[in-house]
Length: 85
Image 1: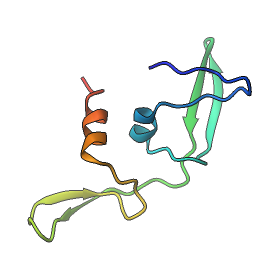
Image 2: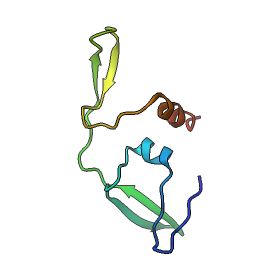
Image 3: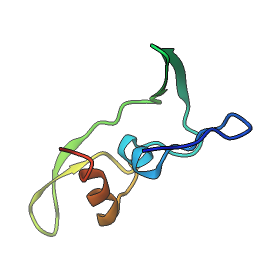
């Protein structure tokens, strides 16, 4: 994916990358230069605890990252999964 540097030195992270990493507006990133490349490393406020729960309606096991986890639409899930080999 490609993005551009603005005249203010700002970079826009493409939506699929933000969603894959669970990044939201206002999240902090560490910036490092390594081997001539710029690295952006998300600062985690706290790690999310993923749990396996049983869906009350279907009785099937589901993963839950808690109420604060970003919700994904089916389209977003397909987009994220399309990036995996």
